[in-house]
Structures are given as structure tokens and as C-alpha cells.
Amino acid sequence: MRADVAYDEETRQELLEVVSEEAERLDRLVDNLLSMAKIEAGVLHPERQAVALDELVGHRVRRLSHLFSHVRVAESIPAGLPLVDADYSQIDQVVTNLLENAARHTPPGTTIDVGAHLAGDTVAVCVSDRGPGVDLAHADELFEPFRRGPGSGSSGIGLAICRAIVDAHGGTISVHNRDEGGAAFEFTLPVHHG
Image (tube, rainbow, N blue to C red; front, side, top):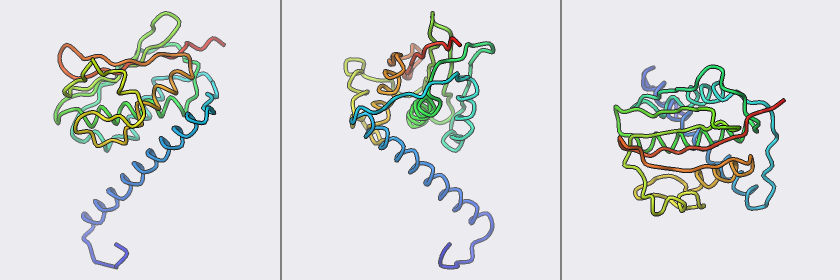
């Protein structure tokens, strides 16, 4: 495009979309690397506020819509779900990393499920895919830095960052295989009392 090559409008728009998507992907990778540096330096501290998970998840799904061109995303976050006590930006990063992983592992034409429910004094958020699932004998290793599953094209730090952020919030994160196939990543956050 810089060489003043004459592209038709459709090709020009497609090229601009690719540039935009790659810039966003690079931005997310830099965010992950900065978070990893904060984790390793011991300076990852949540700036807590009341967060509405339905709004956060809905916004993130819309912003990442280009990742879901081959799949459907089904959100099931009930109205009236309590607010959580969390750092909006950090939880946005957790949701982003989990959605990106799900998009990578979900076969075309299937669905990624994103849901949340009240679990005692916490809210549990679950992102599920329809992929091959995980080897549960090595599930904890998935949350270690620079560990990647077979055939993964990821950086290997996304899930480690998710665990560190969720831990910093006093929550838990885990993975299990779904009965109908695929993996489900679930994390908890404290309910906001304010």
C-alpha cells in the first residue's frame, strides 16, 4: 500500500483489516509480556473496583470478533449477577487470553461458550471450547510460563498470566475436559461488597 500500488477497494479494505488485526494481536502480546515482567518482579497488584462481568465479557467478545469468524460465541451471563471486586484491565486480559485460546482450539462451525454463575461468595467465569481437550495429567503445567500444548502457535505465557492475575485477586483458576468434548477454563473472583 505504501508503494502506491493501485488496489481495488475490496482488496484495499482486506489489507487494512489484516494490518489492523495484526496490530491488535501485537498489542495483546506486548500486554502479556509486560504483565509477565510485573509478575516476575512481584509488582502485579490489582486496582480493585466494582466490575460488571456481563459488560466486560460482552465488550471483549465484540472487540475480538475477528477471531471468531469461523465459530460462534454463546454468552450466558445471567442478569442480576453480582458485581465482582476486581481490576477491570487485568480481568479483561484474563478473558482475552482465554477467548484467544478457545478460538485457536475450536473447530470451524462449532461454538465457544462463555458463562458465569454465583458460587458462594465468588463469581465463577467459564470459557469452553469444542477442541481436543487437555491432558489432565499435565493440566497444572498449562499454567506455567512458556508451556504450550501440542501444535500450539501461542506464546506460552497467556495461561500463566491468567493464573497470576486470578491469584492476585484471591481467586482460583482450573481446567477440565467437557463431557461433550473440548476444554473448559474456569476462574473465580470475589463478589464486590460495597
